[in-house]
Length: 171
Image 1 (cartoon, rainbow, N blue to C red):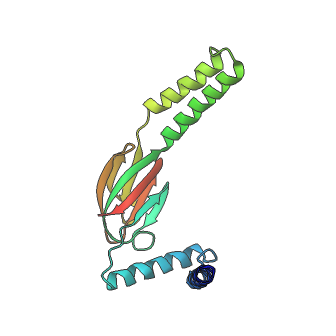
Image 2: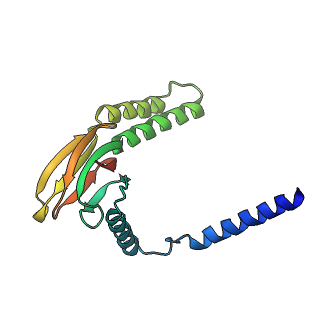
Image 3: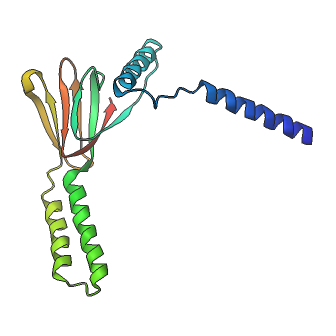
């Protein structure tokens, strides 16, 4: 029995070592090399008929179609807004000051809590724009947290995300 267990353990260790050797270490790649590799993998998967359902998390920034994002139809969903983060920060600061002051009614605590509420009420959400040549805005949508929109990204365009974070999912 001990021999069988030892043989099984040795076999598992050999398999683990073999799989570790075949794993691709991408940490040393530059951003450009990583994006090129990603495009090659997507192309090969398409040639093999594999459907890759990716969900990309996009922070604030500009993403070029054909370089950063593959052309296609997508569903974009707001997962967080800058105003939401600011509101949470002021609320947390107010709670922290409340804990430090011990009296709960200090003017500063009330001020920070009020600022958090004010920012929450002003929350306009995330702005998502499809930008064409020469900076022309082709389409613009405003999304609050949890809201989604359908986008078709094709040709020479860029996707710009402002004031928050979104997830982009192939449709």
